[in-house]
Length: 262
Length: 241
Ligand SMILES: Nc1ncnc2c1ncn2[C@@H]1O[C@H](COP(=O)(O)OP(=O)(O)OP(=O)(O)O)[C@@H](O)[C@H]1O
Ligand SMILES: [Mg+2]
Image 1 (cartoon, rainbow over the protein chains, first blue to last red):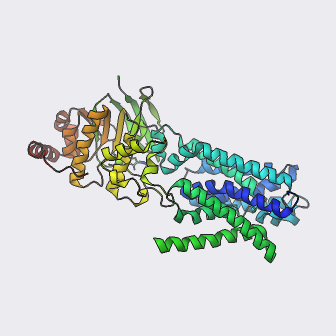
Image 2 (image 1 turned 180 degrees about the horizontal axis):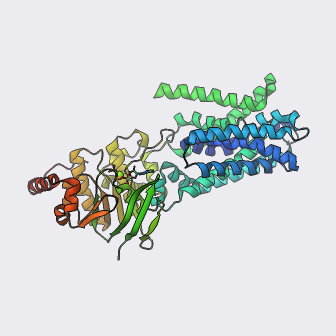
Image 3 (image 1 turned 45 degrees about the vertical axis):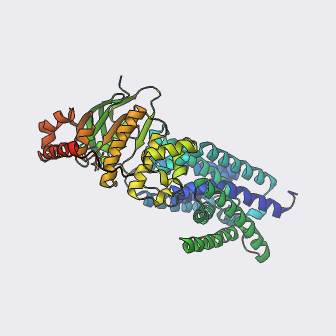
């Protein structure tokens, strides 16, 4: 069954949606959208690194995404407003990655695969990496769920309960880096942020608890992945952007519902 | 032995010295109130006690296995985070519904169980925070301006409730408050803070201290007298919960 590239693509999309949903909720709750973008953009530098050193793409992007996320975390408290700082880092990382990749012979040709994903070319190995990474992210978030929620609600309340909010931040950083590394093949560096944020945002009007929001986000993400793939097949459009468009349509419907009700 | 103590605390925030040489301790069953003008470091002291602030110098010591309940001065819940009051009470440790209901009742918030946190009024929010702080049967309650946003009968009832909770749980209470006249009669000990500890001791002693009068003027002494007057006559306000 895994011989069919469409089946592999669908499974890849579902795997990503599963990992991105709970993580995307934290990205929304903690206002980390820019942080997610900066980490995702650093992945292009990781691609350049992987190609130059003949490493697996997954390894290079994971390393660069981790470095970026840790750097942002460390710089966070100083001087420049965090928004500005993240904007600077995010765009610089993208530009540096695009420049660096031109030095790697032959890489220029398939650059768009790394920017927008190439889900139809997912191999069995890719699929194993994607599902392995997604399982790791989901397991990590489930394990820390109560602590992550408390730290998100208020670092002071977390401290009072003996939880170190910085450690929980590191957990999210790690989960984000793994998700970016997994997602680059599926939706590409430029659209990872969208797959994190849009399903979570679409889930918000229907949820009364954090758990419900994460589950609904997973359903939205999965639906968007399948619908996007279907659209890409029917209209011969790029798959990654089609998936994001499908998610955006669901978000619009949900926002309309939210307004109508609220 | 003290449940919670701090020695020689020095804290700098944003390049600005906030606490210098602050010693503090709280013993079992005591009610201690921290008073001081805005920006005098009261919240910072409480946050140091829970371990949320990096200390430049000094140390905070907790009795082994100490159970803390903390009500922060300000907490805003992001509206993108859906959270019912019931769910909030189960963070970080999940609690039985019966336990949650008891805590809500003790805090005068029994009707709020199914409401969204982001939709609560300031006073309702405050009650829910208190309910959460009571869940683990704390040995020390740290309350940072717990009556802000409460209406006046609500505030009076709140202080009475704190007394009841202390009697019932036997917990110590550390409170920050600007309601000097109420505080003075409700506490066993008052600490007057202004970056450092200006003076501390029995409420009557502190009210007479020159350092305290320099900060709050003699007007508060008048308020204290006024409160004593009220106190003898008005034990019958309605318990508005
Ligand atoms: N995170 C922070 N960064 C920089 N400065 C801070 C921070 N938190 C507090 N401060 C400063 O520390 C000082 C003490 O603040 P704190 O909140 O402890 O005062 P407070 O006594 O609780 O005041 P209030 O009565 O207004 O609640 C103030 O000058 C405040 O500006
Ligand atoms: Mg304060």
